[in-house]
Amino acid sequence: MVNTLEETEEMAKAIAASTHYQPINPEESYSRNYYLFHHKNLQDLIEYREKLTKDPFDPSARKDLSVLLFGRNNPNALANKQPDFIRKAIKESYDDGTDKMAKFARKNLQSILDLYNPQGLVNLALQIPLYTVNESQHDSDVQLIREVNEIQQITKDKNLNAMRKVVVGHAKKYYAKWLQNLIGAYAVALDSFVQEEFGQIAQEKNARLNGTFVKDNKIDTDRLKNLILTSINEAEKAWDDEEDEGDKSEVWKNDLKPAYLAIAQAPYQSLKLEADTEVKFESDRIKRAKERHEKGMPF
Image (cartoon, rainbow, N blue to C red; front, top):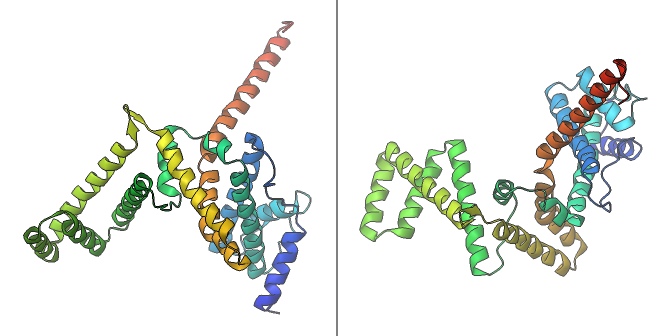
């Protein structure tokens, strides 16, 4: 029997509501191990989703997902479920988990930002949604980062037409009319010219980015944090000002949640490495104490 979409969605909601899996509590204060535990659960959901997208009947992935959602005593809970049912269950759990993780970051914003090293803040500024606020320096920084991100995406995609558009647009913005016409003609005729000019523009943008956020030969962490917090505050103001509940929900979903998720996700790998190192150190410490004890040493 094939379930309708509505039936599948209802079943998925039911399975998500009755599972062992519990997302992070957005009202909790930040602690490293608490954050790592719940972030890993989200990473595992992504991993199992990818495996079951590739092979919907992968028994190992189904078992691992069952343990995550239903606990270790129910490893076969999803063994006989239809793929649509499992996909919906993952989506419900992941959507709930990411929503609560974003709200956790919202509550613990300063604590999480303090985890970032200077280069991490640069990377975050390039990943997080940034918004203009009608303030000269801030808006100029936002525009620069948007341009750098566009350049990086075009480079990654190797999109020659997009490169051509950037080259022509750059000429119109910075060069005299006669030179605009010359560059435009070369851009149409020669792909090699487009690639070379685009490469130079990319270097200029990156150099400008580095210069903007460096002060006294160090990354200007205060300016980066101010850039990020000002953008978030602008989105929070839009959320506060919105009186329509439907639109308010959309502001959260599209403007605030992506920003807070970006903030919450970035420190994960470095914090995990730190925690793993501590676990190994403690394990080695216990091992050394045991060896001393076996040799008759009192400590």
